[in-house]
Image (cartoon, rainbow, N blue to C red; front, side, top):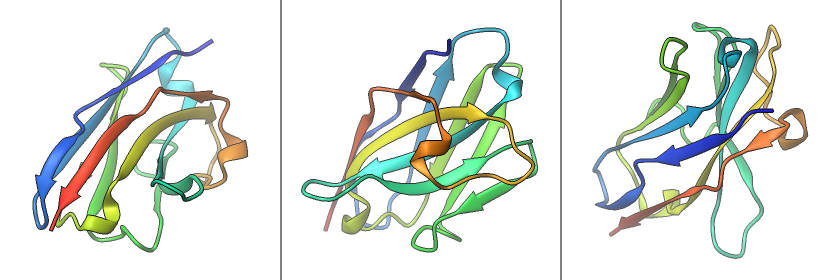
Length: 124
């Protein structure tokens, strides 16, 4: 069982930056693949970024080059650095954990554990 707690959301102007954190419980964090998803009002949850091992990452096309996912296994934490934020990035951002795979996965069904989410609002 893994419990995930997101933090770092907030209100930012377009062009600004935020860093989200997701702290995981348990002693087996390094054995999980981690990902970030987001859900905007009236829209389905969508994939943002995933990381399996330290150097294996995968991004949605809409955030590539602006967002960066990383993990610190010593702190049981995964991060999402978000730069050049745009109003269309406004959403609730969710952290997720699932079985570790060689290639990061982008499907929500690949992840077993989810956090409660943190709101990110980007004003124009």
